[in-house]
Amino acid sequence: MGKGLRTALATVLLGGLLGYLVTGLGGPLIEEMALFGNRESTEARRYMIAVLENEPETLANLTPKGDVVSRAMQYLQSDESQGQWTPLSLTYLGGLTKGGLQVHNYAIELRSASGREQFIPLALTLANGKVIRRE
Image 1 (spheres, rainbow, N blue to C red):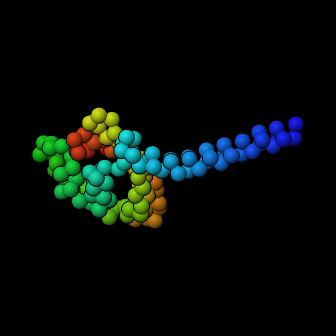
Image 2: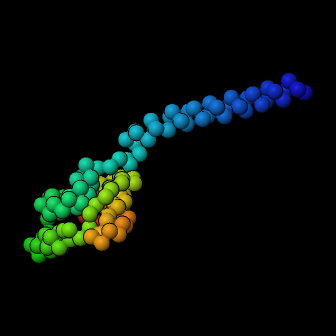
Image 3: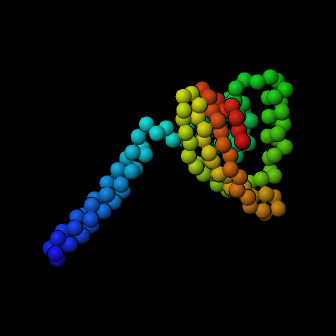
């Protein structure tokens, strides 16, 4: 009975170790494969940098063409917000691509002029390389 128990225990231990190694080495490789579509898009990253660096021209290039009033409001909002908040960090939380749509999630850490720090979650929805929704 002792030999059977040792064999069973060795099998369980070896199986656990093998499973751990396969998961540890194979997980990152599977994640890197384009099949999962969770990579950050270049357009989403450029849009977020433009938001944080207050670049209305870049924002205008990365959004669908709208009417003149919408564009003017975008420039006005950009000018009004300048200096009120200082960005501290931008973290990409992940995203998903399905068909022609992409959704990318971010967390932004900001500091107000009074010194208060705050995290803000932000989700971007892109279609054809243009940001069509920001929430």
